Image (tube, rainbow, N blue to C red; front, top):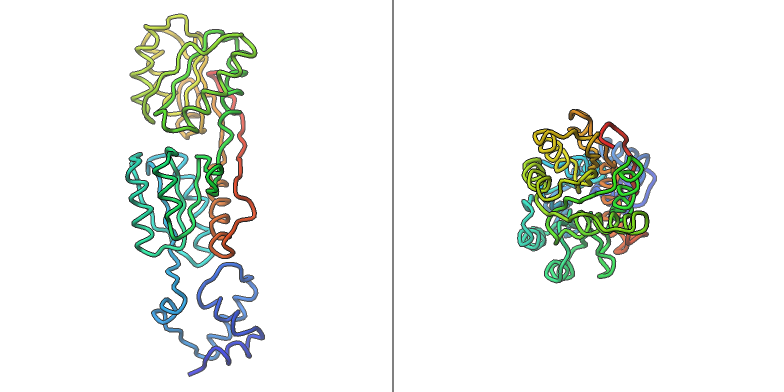
Length: 329
């Protein structure tokens, strides 16, 4: 039976390159892979998968932890990262934390036990317990959505403060003067605290006032609906509403309509995320678009670089956003 030497000789590359192709390692050019694969077929070389795994100590598994499966951001992010991971000859192990902070930590430990080569974490919070779990991981962890750079954790984040500031400007330009914010759990620094911070900065600099309120709920249409019903009673002067997500905003629109007020006319509304429902709602929801799929690709490349070279070219990447103008603002 032919060995590595024969395959290397026939394909015109080194034995180490042949080994990298056989083990589906990251960084080999497609043209080189094609030559080696052709030589393998001609030589009749058959590799022993078990022996390869034992020798290389590689499982070709990447752990991905998401907070919600039924999420626009999660779905588009997975669409972006999965092809990159697969092209590198690796496979995704998916875990859903259901927005449970303890489960995020548990899955980091479980993935280490399963000998994954790296972990991508769509984090819903960032505290000492999570930071400790990441630092104790034997494999690299990259955060998506929360900034771990102060703790030397590679991260890709969204420009949430700027989104909040832009939301304030758009609402003011549309004529709103009494503006409120509906967020989520305060532990979610990015989605709740940063987006509110940007809005507050804008209103303080332009209207010389603070937002009417900072309400908090869940990532759901129902939560936005229930909160807004009460907020309209507590703050009848409300004429501008910034919601941390599109789903919250769509629920808020329903509550506004049922309260005999017109969303987009009497009360201007903005969401974040460019959810598919945003363009189908009546009136259509004005929002901000994040390139979730592109973020998925970039975070996958960042993790593969960490696995291959033990360090990434960029330890923190901030993704921009696009203004989406529709009927509500």
